Image (cartoon, rainbow, N blue to C red; front, top):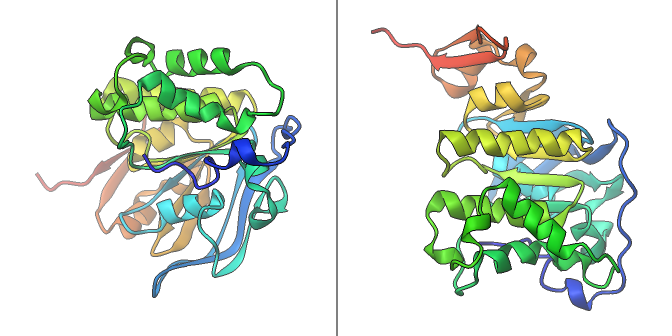
Length: 281
């Protein structure tokens, strides 16, 4: 598992100050005119996006569109070549590592460990930012996160011995245990079965309902339409469209972005957009 670069030094830093509770609609992270280069390649070109307290923002788009790069920039793990990323209204680079870790939690795509940590130990790593802050809620936070992600039964198992789906949920539990108001999740449903995909997206909605800002990279447009308050569709390093799914998930736009004709029709029960590839037979 590639943990954010801010975690290992937390216990040795000066006393950090937790953020005050956010008001629904507060912008907890934003990118303005963002350009990011990886090596010689410009991956993001002039991106504007914001994550607001009380909302789930889904980043969608084809492979190579820049979704994970944008998430890494919003996490302050990637430096912009131009433009600015702000977290809680302050340039991301200006936050001390310990305070940044109290404000945002990151779930990377990969969930691998080289050491035989037990699942509970992995989840408890999410409490590292609170060391020395004077908050005695570690056990409750860890237990609650493991129960929410349905990994409590695996607490004493080696993390490396779990299936891919169980590892993904344990990694998400670590993020939830961190109790940061900004959650940045990179493809949290990629290794999951149908039940657990729904579970993870319900957790995202619950965290938004509790006042957090959730940014999630998704490939499943149906999940994005059902659970996201807003979506940003990325294509070739730019935002092709942003807004509520019902407004931006159109057959013409999705067909152009994905280079695949699609059909968009309302769910008979909820009215949320259902997207299916158009097939001749």
